[in-house]
Length: 63
Image (cartoon, rainbow, N blue to C red; front, side):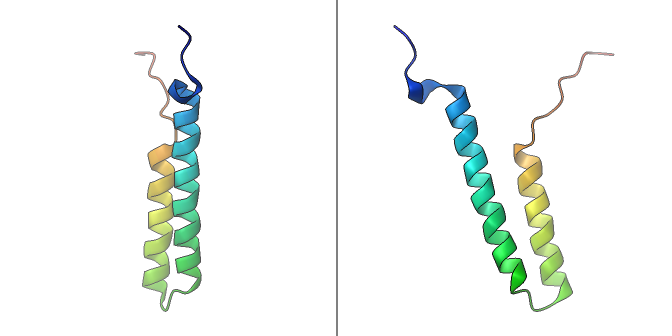
């Protein structure tokens, strides 16, 4: 029996990226209201961590 559309790993990846985009957008909105440079820096670091969490890792060739 063919795999259902819900079982497609591409769909899971799309959902993961959509959630990451929503998180980044929320941090950006919050950063736009930052009251100090430290708060803005924290928001930017959160954005960076979220992007790094969904970035594909390069496959090592063992070299």
